[in-house]
Image (cartoon, rainbow, N blue to C red):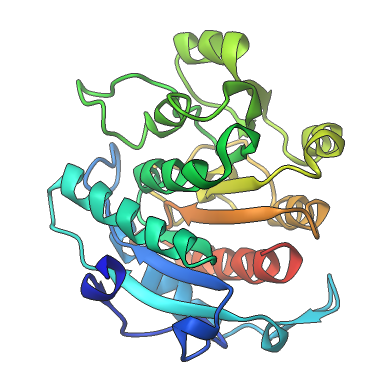
Length: 288
C-alpha cells in the first residue's frame, strides 16, 4: 500500500486507535509546502497539531460526545519527495484512493493548500457530481497560475472546478484575491465574502443529503486567533465562529476533510496549533 510505504508516524492525534482496520476515519499528515508564496513552514503543521491535541479533553461539551466513542486512526505523515510537487501530489492522491476504497473517511492535515487537489479528486471519483465542496479560506485560490505555475496553493480550488460540479463549490470567509478570480466565481461557483456562519446557514438546507467534502485553510481566521500561518490576512473570523460553523454541520454527510496552512514557526504560544487541534476534535465528533 502506498499509504503504508510512505509515512513516518512519530506521534498521533489524541485518542487515535492502534488498528487501521478498526477505524472509520483515517488521519494523514501531508507535510508539503513547496509552493507557499510568502512564509514557508507548513510542512511542520501536522506534527504541531498532533502535539497540541494532547492538551485537549476527549469530551466536547459543545456536542456532548466523546472521542473515545469514535473510531479513527492516525497514520502519521506521508513521506514526500521534497521539492517534487507532482510526485508528492501523486502520493497524496494514491493514499486518499486507498482510504476511500477501504470504505473510510480521509482527514488530512497540511501542509499547504495544494494538497487538497488530489484528495478532492479522489473523493469525487467515488461520489461524483453529488459531491459538495465547502471551502473556508481567506483567499479565493481560483487562479489558473501563480508565478507561472499551475500547481500552487493559489490554484487549488480552480483545479477542483475541473472535475467537481462547479455549482456545488462554496467559498466562505473570502477577503483576498484578484478581480479575475471573483469574476470567475461569479459565473461558476458560489462565493461568500468576509463571513462564514450566516452564509453557511443559508445553504445548509440544500446540501443536507449530499456527500460533503470540507477544506479548511486556517487563514480564514483572523491572525489575532491564528497567527501561525504563511499568508495571514487581517479581517478574518473568530475561533468561536469557526467552531459554530462546524457545529452547524453536525450529523451532515461529510465524507472527508482537510485542514491546511498551519505554520508553527510563526505561532505565538502555540495558539494556532491548539485551535487547529480543537477544530479537528469538533469535526470528528460533529460529522466525521
